[in-house]
Image (cartoon, rainbow, N blue to C red; front, side):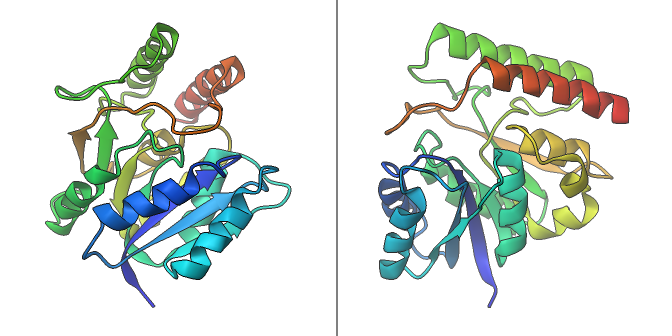
Length: 234
């Protein structure tokens, strides 16, 4: 049965975060017909078992456990196919994304003027919170490279926090060009023709609630490699 909003949350070793996130989503989305799908890459810390326990108490919380497959982008793509909402959101499990922004994103999409709403860390009124200078520099450089190489008009093309109309997927080839790395939004925008009508909302990127960040130098190099590959693809 269709619901209004599906939230896809890729996870790997996020057992310490999923309960708090489910609680926050319930508060932020009070009055909305929503579901959330945690797509877990067989986390050794028991993330999937934790989500399944939550699901026994909250029927709109589900888990898709992947065996032998890894990667945020591919997890999102599988999650899109396994959800039933008219609108689909993507966010991280570590509570760095502001769940209070979800109703505002949903309202913009309900109006029908845009197909995609992105949470941006780089608009006036937004911010990167208390993150290190190194993390700030990497974020600025990555976004600048994406805009320069691909000509994407987003202020935060590396954002992992966005919401879209399901129909947008029908115009996109994201399932063919994505699957590796942490670049699902960039691939979605770059592979959709005609380009999606979008809006952006500012938010402050919060500190991680529990666990360790997955970001490292290898991910940065993979992102740059993906930018060049996307550009050569045309």
